[in-house]
Structure formats: C-alpha cells, structure tokens
Image (cartoon, rainbow, N blue to C red; front, side, top):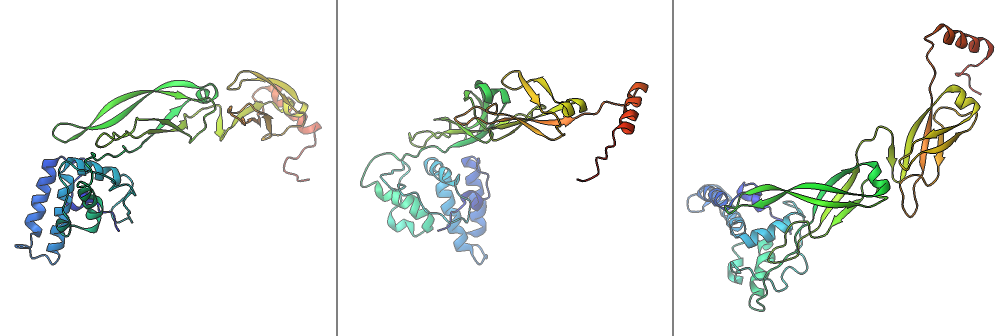
Length: 312
C-alpha cells in the first residue's frame, strides 16, 4: 500500500490553516466534480480530494495523520502500525463500512478500523508524540570535563486560527564528560506533544564540536601540531606543552622528522577506554633574515653534505 500525501493532493502547505484547506478543496472540486468536469480522471481525482479534505479538516485525524507522515513520503510503501486500530476513537466520528468504499484502502486501513473499534470500546485515541532532532555545538573543553549549557530551540505551535508560529524554548542541557562527535543527548519528553493525551516524544541533540584552532578530534583521539626547531628535532629535547587537560612535559626523541606523531596515551577524550592525544611534529626553519643567520645556513650547506631529495 502506498502512503498518500494529503497535503500534496490539495496543494497546500503542511502548516496550512483549516480555512485555507477548505478554500483549496473548493477550487479543486469546481475543477474535478464529475457532473461538470471534462477531465478524464475527474471521478478518481474527486475521490482523492474528498479523502484529503476529510482528514485535514478534522483536527484529531489530521494530528494522527501528521504523526505518521513524519516517517513517510508520498508514494512510499506503507503499512499501518500494528496497534493502530487497538481501541481508538475519534471524537469527530468514525466511518461505517459502507462509507469506506468512497475512499482508498489507505484511508480505510487508518480510519475505518478506528471507526469500527468505537463499538467495542470508548477509550480515547492516543498516540505518542514524534521525536525531535536538533544539533548542539560544544567546546572541546566541555567534552573533557562535562558541562551544563543552555539551548534555545524554535518550537512550532498552532494559534487559535490554526496557523503555525514559532516560539523560543530554552532548555538546560547536561553535557556528559567524554561525549564524542556525533553522539546524541536524549531529553525525555521534550519532543512533539502526544495526541489525545499520549506521551510526548523525546528530543535528541546531535553533538558537534566547535572549530578549534589548536586541536582536531577523531573519535576519542585528539590531535595537535607541535612546532619544533631543527635542532630540537635533531638533538632531542623536552618541551612543556599545553593540553586540554593541563600542561605536560613531552619528550621529543632525537632524530625526529616533521610529521612524526608523539602519543600521550589516555590523554584524549575520557571514557571507559579513553582516547590518546597525539602531537604531530612540524619542523620550523628559522628565517635567514640577518647576516649571522645567513652565515650559519651557508656554513651548514658547506659542512653538512645533505640532500633531502636523495633516496636511500
């Protein structure tokens, strides 16, 4: 069975108010009513727009349809949730079996079963609200030490006329220590409101790190560039370097080349298996911008027979 996009059928936006939906319906009805239309598919099109109007002008049916529509697009294969017809009742009334022939199998599977269930139970129709998804950008320091941050979201809400507006909603979010790029923080009950008293959905915040000029993160591993002088790389040295967790003494082995990675085990993002912190050496040459510097370079060129392009 295909999922039907009722909004597309009537040519209205998903946040259209009921008067706009009725106006769009009347315009299409004048075009496709079988008594006056010369369109070859007038009867079928009239059935489709009648069906779309029946759902989108009924607030409860529309809310239920919108919940399902978050997971599907028009034309996709669709199967009703297994508990869809388990004791649901729409206050606007159900549809008798004889009436269902006027609409599609898609409509009958959703609302026909719910209408027939009315004779078996009087429980109100309920549906859990949909989950919402957003992104949150944090500093690397937040991932190392944990933090609490305020997040402002724009939440859609309907006014009394049925128009959808946005309001700001601010939440306090706990950033757990050791969280990584792409992980989600779940805020229970902060998603879309439920239908008919159903529970609200959840809000999932996908974590992203703000750009950092000093560090690059891959999973739990953290990378930094460490500039060294040629003699430090050649002779070896110990350097006091900053890390996200504080200062450490880093030993540069003699004979190091540019691009060499020096690992500080367990100094990456914390966790059950903490990552590593890697310093990538960058050999920086002093400029030959003084007479003394030029003489030193000339001496090295003369006394050190070295060709960096010669392969071993």
